[in-house]
Amino acid sequence: MVHMHITAWALGVILFFVAYSMYTSGKQAKGLHMVVRLLYILIIASGLLVYKNVNWMPMLYGIKMLVGIWVIASMEMVLVKASKQKATGAFWTQFVIAFVVVLYLGLRLPIGFSPFA
Image (cartoon, rainbow, N blue to C red; front, top):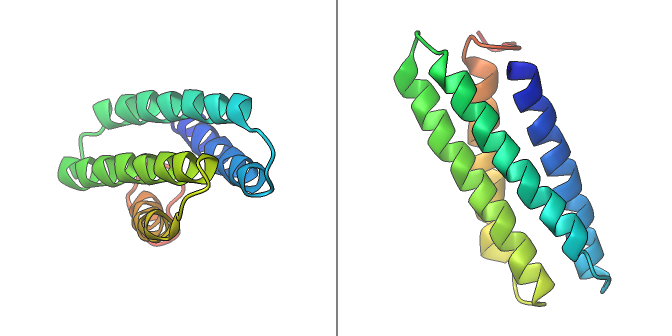
């Protein structure tokens, strides 16, 4: 399940940047935006399944889950604001901060790949 979760968020982040670049270049990316939203659902579902199997440090995994939802919310707000040609700076800042925190927690905690453990 961890591999599905990692694959889903890696695809989600890559397609997020592709959709953002399409929006900023003036092209329509509504279909791609919908695919990214589908990946958000897969990320949350696989993350919940990973969380369900945690029996060690559940509070840190809960914090990681909440910050992960914050990452998804900021990604969506960046794409929505970019599609309306509005300023996205505040949401980019939130995205970067939350992404660094969730990535650190994901690499620090023992499930999956843990270079910091």
